[in-house]
Amino acid sequence: MDDGQERVDGGGPAGSGGPAGAIGGGAPSDGDGPGGGVPSQSRSGEPAGDVYDWFRRGARLLAQGHPAAAEQLLSRAVEAEPHSRSIRETLARAQFDAGSYAAALENFRAVALADPADDYAQFGWGVAAARLGDFETSAEHLALAVAMRPETDHYRAALRQTRATLAARAGAYGLLLPGAPGYLAPPPGAEGPAGAGPDGVDGDA
Image (cartoon, rainbow, N blue to C red; front, side, top):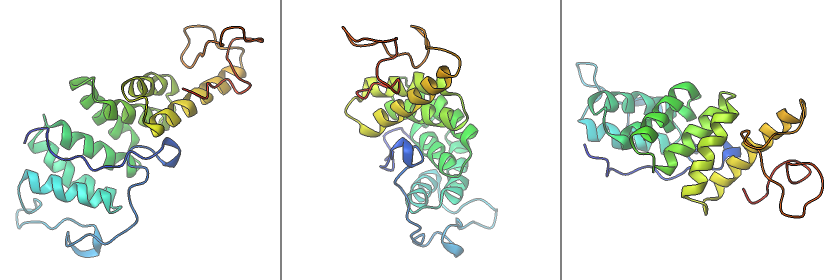
């Protein structure tokens, strides 16, 4: 399977939960098994269909708000096609929505390392790192995502949130120094200590 396969659209705001953010709604699963989210299986115990079927059904389950069921199918698809970035990235989104942040981070990381220009993988790496409390790594990868797609509001919102967290943490121990993660240089002619505005966050991140 090549990497031109569809990616489920979404990528909701960081404040709404992360990569799949606004995706969901709890709709029934359009024939993917009993209970609305259980993939049908063959007699061998494998999901019915081929790798592309698993990918499409997993992506549909994710869009319908069943990330755990989606993760089952997409994990099988990744095992069969480990070099497909599209499948791995969709699996990472399902893992993130299922609360498996460490697993999601590893898959977003794998996609981003394979293709550093994948802005969504950088974003996913950043928000997963934030969920795990690693805000320095989060700031680094969210900044990359914003640099690649500065017009994307939820990338910018996630970066502002991470930088605000870093600034708040640094405030307990003193000012952020130039070069530290989350440091924002004051605008020319600004008064007061380095760190820009009163909350230490550049509103145009």
